[in-house]
Amino acid sequence: MTGFNLSDLENIVAVRAKAAPEESWTAKLVAAGQRKAAKKLGEEAVETVIAAISEDRKNLVDESADLLYHLMVVLNIAAVPLQDVMDELARRTSQSGLEEKANRKTP
Ligand SMILES: N=c1c2ncn([C@@H]3O[C@H](COP(=O)(O)OP(=O)(O)OP(=O)(O)O)[C@@H](O)[C@H]3O)c2ncn1[C@@H]1O[C@H](COP(=O)(O)O)[C@@H](O)[C@H]1O
Image 1 (cartoon, rainbow, N blue to C red):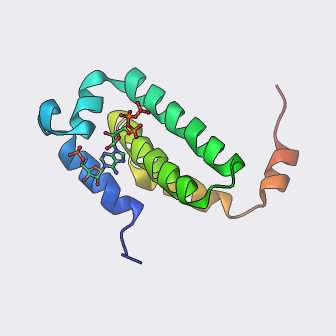
Image 2 (tube, helix red, strand yellow):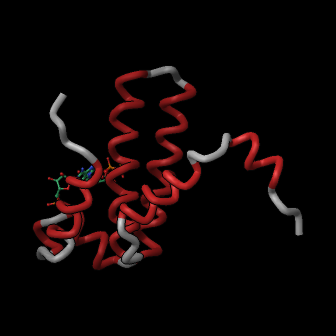
C-alpha cells in the first residue's frame, strides 16, 4: 500500500495539464478537448467492464486505474473539483441506494 489517493492524482493531472502536449499524455488530452477526453474515458469504462466480466483481477485493477485517471482528466477540463464529487458521495451516505431509487420523482 502506497498511501497514494485520488486527490494526489487530481493534483498531478492539474500540474501536467499545463505541460507541453508533446511531453505529456495529460496535456495532449487537455489540448484535444473535452469531447476527445470523454471519448477516451468511455473507452476505458468499456475496457473496465470487459475486465470485470472476464473475471480477470489483474486486468480489472489496470483498467480501473486507467478509468480513474481519465475521469480525473475529464473533471479537470470541466473545472469540477474532485471535492465536489466527494461531497456528493458524502451527501448520499444518508440513505441507501435502493431507498433513493424508490423516492425518485418521475417526470
Ligand atoms: N495514471 C496515468 C495514466 N494512466 C494511463 N495513462 C495513459 O493513457 C494513455 C491511454 O492508455 P491506453 O492504454 O488506452 O493507450 P492507447 O495507446 O490509447 O491504447 P489503445 O487502446 O489505443 O491501444 C496511455 O498513454 C497511458 O500511458 C496515464 N497517463 C498518465 N497518468 C498519470 O499522470 C502522470 C503524468 O503523465 P503525463 O501527463 O503523460 O506526463 C503520470 O505520471 C501518471 O501519474
